[in-house]
Image (tube, rainbow, N blue to C red; front, side):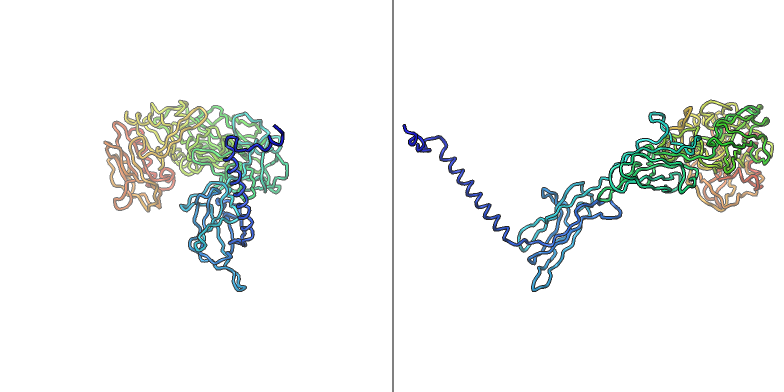
Length: 617
């Protein structure tokens, strides 16, 4: 067969040849039709024109561009419904419904339609980050048009990170960096940051509201920064601070290394990062346990290497019992001899002062034990223990270190206004006592509960070790007599370890004995209502105010009432003394009642009779 003959063999002789030819022809026809349609659409004027947009925004921003915005005009008058959809066309939000839009006609410009989207669904919930479209449903034209724009929702801020703060090496037990340093050197902050408008802020966190005290920009490729504790050449106030790195992205989202521009740690939690700085120029550490009278104490002093003068005086006395000068970080003075008591350590440099307390236990044991609430006092100090820059307090639901050194130069308010005046009043009347702290009771050092006839919980014992609470209840039921001197006591518990107070609880509905108490109130007076135990005899029957009191809603089940004082006109019980099995509990319920005995005759008479009652008289 010739070559020409072979090439002209009919294709129909091959299997499927007819089907393939038909399919090929259809494809050619459709392609041609599509091309023709496309050419026609290109020549056809668009229905929408004049589209403008703001396409990138963050709905979470409180200021700046927090909405996607757009404008458009129509070439033909129509009734329009405007909505937002995902890129795949799923509905997200209806923005406007049934809007009549006029076209441009006779030289008169048509309606300019403006719209915006706040990044939320119809139900108000924010849509996830991503890209979205605007769709127009044209009722008269019977069609829908998608505007030639997309919105991008971006709520994710930059993530700057503070890598370390030194010169201390990482890997050690977390703690804040201290300023000023004894060697006079600054601290160095190392960080990693991306975005625009980068900066470093120093924020004081031991205030009611954190406050930025310094903000400096970060230059390109900068990875560290030094700070010597000054602003504009002046040293910052003694306190608790955090160093935070921040940056802003293209939208305006701002990211912080602390997690927030307002570095307030959540309840039971901590701030992100490890940017804590504690500024202390002069501070002294108070006693956790009593020291035997006449022996030497060991008191931690922070003075940045400077020499300091010190003096020890018994509370209520102006003249010091001993004094000296030192620059050592641990002061070891010999304490005064004599009966148990609270002593104040005054420390002074050329431009700073600080105070701490020292408890001494006399050689002769006494029937009444006074307990200083050192755990509650320590746990309320606005001190950063773990280096995150947030003050750690028991009220914030976190553990606190008991050996912490305060940043306040003065003694705590509760100790100054309640504990110290009560002990001064007892000392002036030669009422002797043993002295300890709640921390010492929990750790088994110093005088014990057992062996005492009466116990005074001086000051606000807001938190008390759970085991000590149970021991107190057992001791009372076996015949002990307890005076709870201040409102707000015995409603929370902690666990005491050798170094810390952990697991702080929320206020309980009842105290360990079964008292149910109301929140603190202001009243004009408290009147005697019952006095079987003769605790209130000798007064004029009234404690006059204004007074801050803690009403008693319910006394322990089965307890016999020994004495009671109420708000005027037989109102709520405030002062309540009850028999609990073989012992007794007195909740005086009036803030500062013991301290008032220094100047108020009725309070003084009550303390005299109560002291006799606690001794078993």
